[in-house]
Length: 141
Image (tube, rainbow, N blue to C red):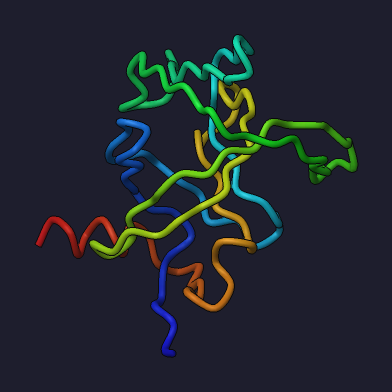
């Protein structure tokens, strides 16, 4: 299987989350992928996640309820360990829909609301750090 070449950043759709043209950073240093979630509420064995941001473009006030979710330990680049909720969703690269695991994190203070990590990238993509918005540019042609 040949791998698609992507750049270091892109604008990607998460159709099941109602999020479109979201700025993502391709992070080969991260194992897991993470998405900004401003509020997490656990009720009736479900996880209600509010995707809302004052700083991130196209992050309107979207609310999604996940009936299936887990928790996982994530170690940040500064060595800090955090236990995060993890959900399964879908992401679109080059007009193709892929399944993706996303950990939920508050990322308002970060430049990108979404990090795409190695777990998702492996066996699908190669990263060329000189490129940007490769998938998005193909979509808009």
